[in-house]
Length: 424
Ligand code: GDP
Ligand code: IMO
Ligand code: MG
Image (cartoon, rainbow, N blue to C red; front, side, top):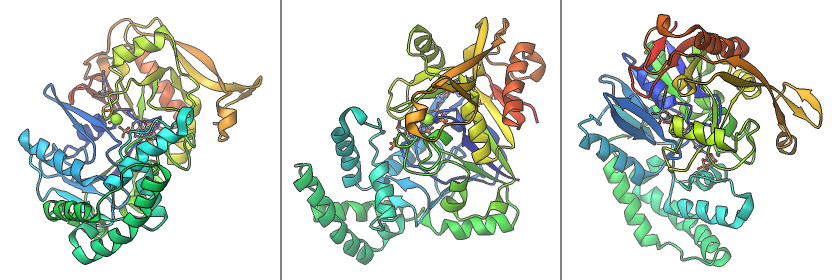
């Protein structure tokens, strides 16, 4: 079975928890997009791990983790992640493969990410400042450095000499900042190559063989549908394709290599960074949700903006990704609420619509139309069996599944691996 696990909202839906849970017994977990802007949290026996680049299958013995060509990799952050995991006794060796075609986040791209944000002033995207935008821009401009270049000294030298001229011009002349020394950067890049050489390989050919041999595969999404550069709330998006199409371009597998597409749906909505968010609760209720849900960024520590579930978003995401199943997370955070609100439509200048507006200037005028459902009295926190879920909670998750025209796969009732109820 080859299953995709994709964020259906604005990221941080609990993909790490769901992927780690489903990875049990799987041959491969492969990431296809994004970079260290992601923060995927996994809690095993009360111990918390946050992964940024390494796929969430790394805690499963016998599972191979693949970082695909669609990713943007910061070598320093990857080396640190490998060392940190090893320090915790987690094995990282031939079970990790990094695509030679994945793009390298160079230090100048991290700096340019911050400088670009600064210049935007009040129109800031609120990026993670990990260098994502400038790195994907280099990829599209065909001046990017790829992971395989780090282990080919001649190629690296030629590419870096050329690129650094452009980057230093921009950094020094336009932004008035200190540029980068070629020698220092070249040496640094070679040392990354040396450290990461055992992992760098042709992952496209590895995935091809795995698919042909019928291996079980999980495709791990990063970010979320509404942060997709094509389908999200542009320009307040990331610079990659977290949606289903990203799997094919980001790993080099054909559409037939995806059997199921699972949506990870947080039981309410959050967003970190700038941009439209129709169901956002800016007052006391939003703060309460943030505290109850521990909604602080796993990568930047920033407080996440919080609000009610948005079915306009979820139905749109269901179409874009072709979701066949859903995994509802953080249901326990809604414990104790008398009533639960769900946005079923938007009103834009008095006109009601259930269609997600693609034009950003329409989107910011969208007012949510709510339906109220009954909350549940008995807490769901930590529940592991379907029979132990109160009927109102079951009603809520089934209502979401029906509206998304997908089957309910699982419900997560706590951050721990075991706090999971399987449905199918
Ligand atoms: P990801 O980026 O989609 O992997 O999600 P994050 O790890 O950034 O954010 C999800 C947060 O919710 C993390 O702190 C998880 O440990 C936590 N979490 C995941 N599932 C549940 C759940 O069912 N209940 C609760 N209370 N927390 C959860
Ligand atoms: P995971 O995988 C939530 C957001 C940033 C910003 C925008 C662009 O943990 O769900 P970028 O650094 O990518 O250029 O920032 O995208 N963002 C995320 N928000 N979860 C993520 O990843 C995110 N990755 C990027 O906050 O608004
Ligand atoms: Mg996250």
